[in-house]
Length: 203
Image 1 (cartoon, rainbow, N blue to C red):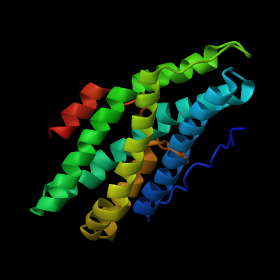
Image 2 (image 1 turned 90 degrees about the vertical axis):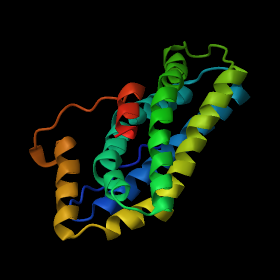
Image 3 (image 1 turned 90 degrees about the horizontal axis):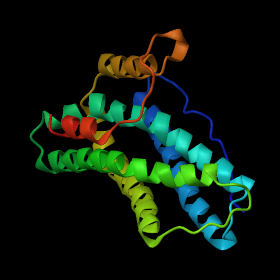
Image 4 (image 1 turned 180 degrees about the horizontal axis):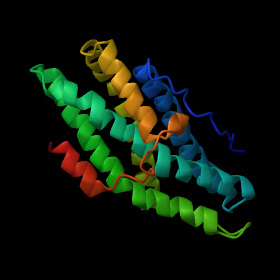
């Protein structure tokens, strides 16, 4: 059985935005693991059940809405600080993370289509994931796991060390504003497309 959960949204604390980012990472990892468990669940049962459909909707909803906002947090507030420096290792790390964002955005439509097939399938319908789809799903989940590890071990500590209290508060305020937390106006969240992610990676 798939252990379904709907993790609470990370606590919005504009005074500690990097802790907020790390809380987002926890949820990303849980959604990536749920995606992997869903694939195994369907493989074992060879049929779609209600639990599989609910899990597919949950993963789809998270990566449609919350994950793009998290990517944008990093592109706006974390990466530029390090790209302005001269540390070769940090520059290489950020370049890799930017490339990850492009690759994640490029893979997401196909992952989403697989999830949508689960959502749309009649209960009890026979199910088979193709070999290509299995590779795609594994790549998508594993890329997020490696991405998070690099950020938390290397990039976040370095970026945070460059920021004073005023910069951290401005970062947190922007994160809250874009999510319309506390009643502030914010553009509606939308999935990041590969083209826009690629443009940011080059700037």
